[in-house]
Image (tube, rainbow, N blue to C red; front, side, top):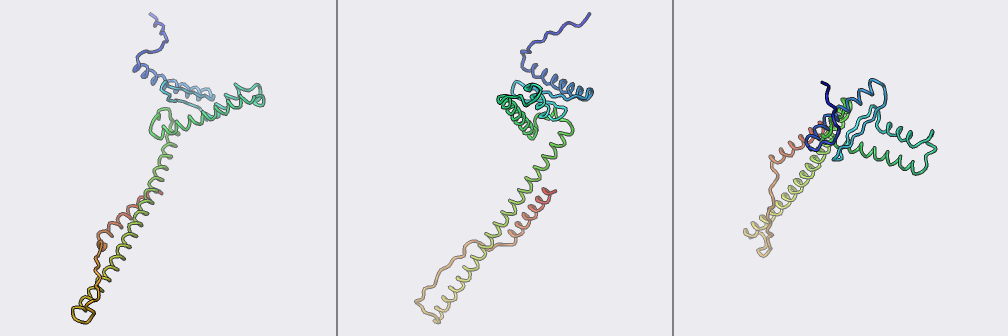
Length: 224
């Protein structure tokens, strides 16, 4: 018995429809690739899924193929015969293709829709991600070093303030001692000073040095 004729109609079950689309999409992309290789032809395949997702394949540059297509459709022997409205339509088509290409690249950066990419495209995507990660690490290291410099400036300022306050406190104590010994004026007012903050200790300095080394190591790793 021969195989019965398959009736083509819309699959009503949503899950089955998605599964069928995924399988046949991959098969169609494979067939398009095989056709371009076996017959040495330029092939462009564009699929818009119901949710607005875009799937495409092109044997060469997609934009160049679309440009040739529009020239063939809207020209009559030469593109010089295109009127103004046709030129605008062509420009809109180019911008739309460029926008869709950028959207596709953005989704690829997020790890989405990687199935249609070939080995070369995946390699280029990996290089772009490595470059972005390296730049992010370098910027992080620069911010860390800047923050360390600010903290050291604050530490130096506090140290200078404490030194000045200690000097004034010692001067006040000396005058008080002279007053008690009868060597100074009893009515002279003795200023009262209080030391604010704490003098920086070695542990905080060691912590700053460790942070700086980590930041410089991160910057060196980003540049590599």
